[in-house]
Picture 1 (cartoon, rainbow, N blue to C red):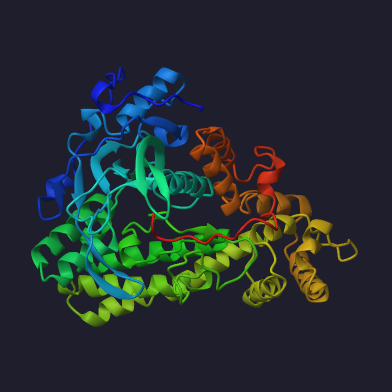
Picture 2 (picture 1 turned 90 degrees about the horizontal axis):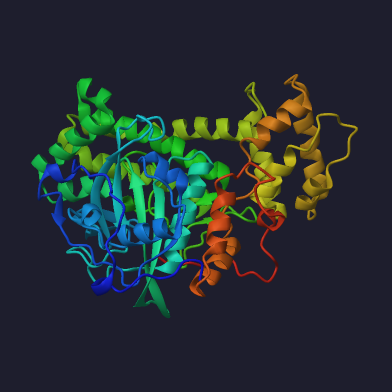
Amino acid sequence: MTSAALDTPASAPAASRAWPPLAQHFAALGEAFSVPVAVSALPDPVLVASSAEAAALVGLTPTRSLDDERDWALAFGGHVAAISANSRATVYAGHQFGNWAGQLGDGRALLLGDWPDASGGQHSGGHARWEVQFKGSGRTPFSRMGDGWAVLRSSIREFLCSEAMAALGLPTTRALCIVGSSRPVRRERIETAAMVTRLSPSFVRFGHFEHFSYSGQTAPLRALADWVIAQYAPQCAEAPQPALALLQWVVERTARLIAQWQAVGFIHGVMNTDNMSILGWTIDYGPFAFLDAYDPLHTPNTTDREGRYAYGRQPAVAHWNLLALGQALLPLIDKPESALEAVNRFRPQYVQAMQQQLAAKLGLTEPQPDDGDLFQELLDTMQANRSDWTLTFRALAKLGADASEPIPAALADQFRREPQAFADWVARYRERLRAENRDDAARAAAMNAVNPHIVLRHYLAQAAIAQAEAGDFAEVRRLLHALQRPFDAQAAPPHYAEPPPEHAPPACLSCSS
């Protein structure tokens, strides 16, 4: 085992590190919004991995020694009062798979408070603080039939993907660290419990607004909207209808986010309204995956039998979820039609954002009227050939504009089923490139800066999980290091950039973790 497990809670040594105090901005909203819940500390806590980049966001010194690791395991395994003393569970509701699920809430997550952003807002989207949350810290009044625990397997996936998405440049909750334990947890098999410490400027979800709106609690609904505006979107307070301005703000940010998801081939897997951040950030990494072979109808979630949350349907689902948020905000908006108009701006905003993403992925800087057709023809050809999403766009950077040059082998290999259709597309693409008047080297550098060399493929995560479950955390840490440098071909072992082996099972994941 990379790090030795600590003693049981009864004999756990006191941590030697002094932790900065956590402020309680969300708790100040009152008992209608969250309730105090004690953290259930992990027995025999052991630090699986930590993110130095995430630690820097809140001014924490990263782990450099076994003593540091012991301190972190104690603190973020629930044993240090300075971290855990004011933990709270928030209440929200939501639509799940398109159906009203009623009251939900933090069933296994606890908000600990917030730390100021160490960069003065430069790395938090301009926000002043990071809320700190344990995930997997025991039962709450909102756990329903759940046990409140998270298992090592799913915790590693969330930890790695949070940091991978941030390195890809996407708005996302961050993962400070993951702490494992000896606690047995029953899922499809007996596993062990773990906790992820998550950071976000806010963990407020669409479902927080739905809870108060659909239960007829207009005063708390208004208080929540006013609080979110004051904390994260103060410009909305100056609008004639602040709640409508907030909705418009969320629509715009969500449109950009979904375009960014699509551009890197990310499938969230469970886009319920209670898993949608009011900030337009990625939140809740459950049955997610990155595309291997391009299939717009692919979903990694075995629970999603109808494919509601498939890759190609994510934009439509985001629009649907925004309609649910608009509905929830109607008590605060003068005219219902104005809310509908705000939400219906999503599609043109998404299309524009997606076109910008695809143009960058193809190395185009001067938009042309026919670019949309060029993009769609490529996607259609990729689907017909089951081309690997990440490898195809990375290899396109090696294609020169000169029509006399052969198509690079690494690129041609992605289109073996219909090579002529791809060759025809390449001819049109090269003609478009020549209209740019940009040299191949400059374009390739720009493309390699937006098309990652590696992403968190399912088989890579599974290999790290298997080793961690055997007590060796080294691969989790190696993979984290590479994922935090996704555009650098020299930062990762060569096999990290390879497609899944033929024998590797596809991502088939459930919401259970």
